Length: 350
Image (cartoon, rainbow, N blue to C red; front, side, top):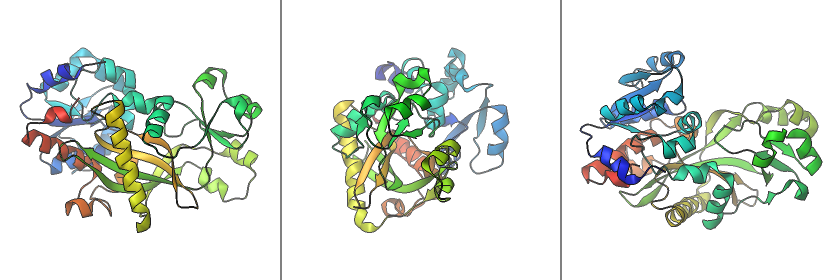
């Protein structure tokens, strides 16, 4: 694991901070938010993606660093270039997926916003389960293949947007649908009936507070539309996919807010105890709201999530915190700015 002291050493040489990330996932709002806070922006970009960012004048990076493959960010010369440009990386789902959690933890010697230790707790579903249990959040029951006695959802490690998830209700069905190489990495959870809600949070070490920034729902490829056709589960399973294709804005009934806010606070408190300095910056709890109005948390995304792209000018909740447009992307840059002004960058950069 790269040490905090190594990163702090690079950070002391920085003159004028630039906000950088891979041109994917939530980069538009990250660049737009950084510009709102007065930072220069750097986009790590593949040739075929540049036209997307050139199409949005206020959200394109000030400078492109072109690559043929995103794994090139691990090259020593490329990392040196990022440091020379005073870059602070804002990690998002695509960054973690393309570069790899282990590589970020052990090989990526560039200052990053947040706590890179969180990646092992997010990416390993067994550690993730321990984190959520330690936070005293209600989570779905977990099964071994030979224990399955009800409908379950089978998942795999990593941030892949729902790819390869499937339903099964018995060991035989699990064996039939799982490739041999994936069986040891499968994570089997009870399928909880309810509505999927994805609340967005931000923990500020500088202000010492957990902020509730917004909430969304997700469109998952074709599974939602297939459910409306009255097909059998076997037909839905044969035709369906859980890959996330988009997000839908959501406002919950106000009586649910105390529960959601407390869940975010407990998640942060637990992280501070399990892997100090804990969860820093944006994160999302992936939940099911049951018909008894209780939330079951089935995953955590310990970074900015694509659902926050709904709110580049702020959400129905962030306006009550800031009184000005505040996206999750801008909130990251605001935290960096606050930390810089207080000479506390080491609190939020690792």
